[in-house]
Length: 114
Length: 111
Image 1 (cartoon, rainbow over the protein chains, first blue to last red):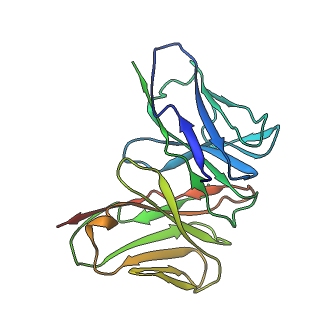
Image 2 (cartoon, chains in turn red, blue; image 1 turned 30 degrees about the vertical axis):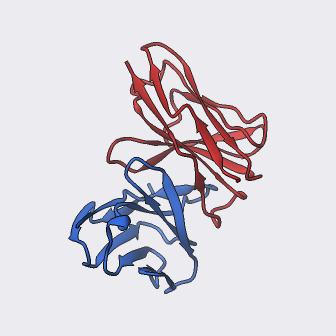
């Protein structure tokens, strides 16, 4: 079955550490996105990519980095510069650029700073 | 900046009662999408509306897009416990190829 796989499901990070969240899709979608969701809150855009080797900052990109070396993969690194990283991270993809297509979301990664 | 507000933020209903959430944008939207997120889960795409005044139905769910394309609503008839979750609307972010999600309405259904 096609879909988006995020790993790990739960991640614990120590202060000062960088961690990388994995996002892989086999839907052959061109566009991929990373959102952050805080408890009881909506979704805020971190980064998005419309094509391989290209990506743009979203509303809250500070303290995060991404890469898009393959169409299927869009990993997110949470750096030590992100002051409040504890949150639920959601990766999504859509068939193409533009906003006429629904997003398919992964099951998310819950990151906790310990 | 662009804002997409949803009301109410929370709604508790008795099973069998109807439920409506409203989505209001500060700008005109070319389309609007609706998503449902179950507790502990991830958002799932429900539907997209494109035309002014458009109405679409999915079983007990009715979606409307306003005439001015700045607001939308989701109405659930005779709620069931399976309807529990947070409902988000999302609209195109002006000048960019991504979606701006609304604040969400969390629905609780009391059996």
